[in-house]
Image (tube, rainbow, N blue to C red; front, side):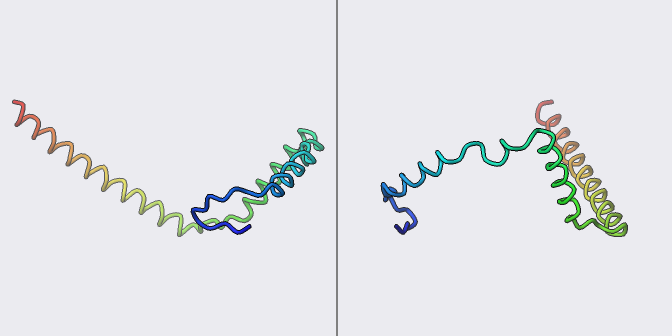
Length: 96
């Protein structure tokens, strides 16, 4: 059966029967066979493997990124302070 975008066709009875038999034959999967300590060990091994894939910035890149962030935050603090100061004086002018 081919589905088109926006199709309202329902799945065939054969597809439903196949899905129900696949669901019944699977009981717990691989997790049920391992103990909690083996799963925890696997979890930490996967963390270490993922961290080895990370491309860490060099010292120069880290310094330049930090400088840009601090500069941007300082500009935003100044902008918010100016807007707050202006709105404060506008409210005092309007409300007395």
